[in-house]
Image 1 (cartoon, rainbow, N blue to C red):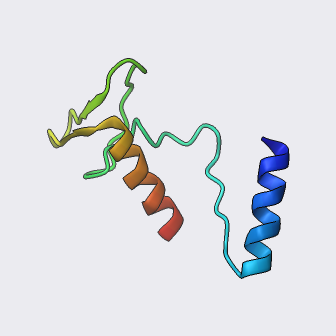
Image 2: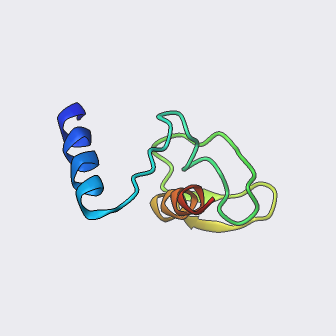
Length: 73
């Protein structure tokens, strides 16, 4: 992974792109993409149902939306 990251950073610099690295422990799957509530969620659970706002979404899509928010902030 270290070599992959080095290559990615090299290519990004070459083409004028920015790379944003999310912390390893960033709770992208556990955070509701609708209201921001963070809740525990076991890995085998594939649908995220927020306890606060009742938003229901696929776990991977939820994580992708949260990472997009992280990149745009």
